[in-house]
Image (cartoon, rainbow, N blue to C red; front, side, top):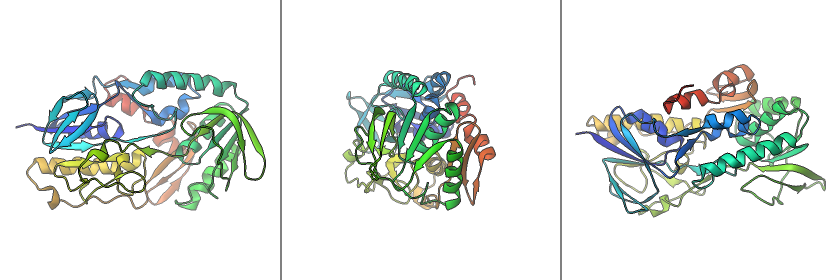
Length: 360
C-alpha cells in the first residue's frame, strides 16, 4: 500500500520535503497561495526588474507523485487534516511546515502573489529614482539589500542601521569584519550601536525621516525595515498540547514531533530547534526528516533512529550583489569567489526552476 504524506505549507521546507519523499510516498501539499515565490531573490529583484518573473513559479509541475491542494489547514485529528472549507485529507504522516513572515517586499503578504508582484515592481522604480535609502536591521536581508542596491546604483547614499556593535555578533568575528569592509568599500555607511525606535512602519518600506540617538536625522526616499522573520503560529496553536518558545516556534521532541504527537512532525521556521531561520538552517532538518521517514516507511520505528541534532553554528551565505560578499561555511569564513559561486551569481534560481519543472 502506498504511504501517504500530507505537508501543511508549500514554502521552502514543504517543497523540499515533498521532492525528497515523492519517490517513496504519495505527497499532498496544502498551500494557500496559487504560486510559489523564491523570496531569497527578492532583494535583487528590487534592482533587476527582469528577475521578478523568474522567481514566481507555478506549482503545476512540482510533484510527479502527488498533488497541490490550494487551501488552509484548520486542524489535525490523528493524521487527518481538515481544511477551512471543510475538506479532509487523510494519510499516514503529517508534516507541519507553516514557515514565517517578513516585512514587505521580502516575503509575500497574506495569499496575494499578485500584490507581491505589484509591490516589488513599484519599489524597484522607487529604488532606481532614490537618492538616499535607509535600511534598519543588519541581518542577512538588510545586509544583502544594502549590497544589491550599492552594486546596482553606486550613486545612491545608503545607510545601514544596526543596534549591534558588529555585524553578526553571534558568529565568528571574521565574517562580520569582512562584510563590514566590503559594504564600506561599496559606499554603504554602517551605523553601529544605533537603536531606531521611531519606525513609522515595521511591515513595509516607506518614505520618511529617522531620528538617530545622537540627534542626527536621516531623510530617506525609502526606509526598509529589515528587522527579522516572524513565525506564523496561528495554525500550530490549534494543536492540542502544543507549546511555543519565546519566538513563537513550536517545541518538538528529539524526532521533530510537536506536543507528543505520533506521525506528526514539524520542520522549518515554525519549529524550535535552535536552527537559524534560513534555507541553510532548515535544509538540515529536511535532510534528516526525509531519511527518517523513509526508514519508517521501510518498517523501522522512528524512535529507534538517531535523534535530530541541530546545527552547532549554522552556515550562512551573504552575497553583496552577484560578485562579492562573504559566507560562513563549516569551519571557515570564505569571501567573494566562493560566495558568488554558491549563491551570489544565481541566487539558486536555476535550481528551483528545475525543481518546478521549468526550463532554466
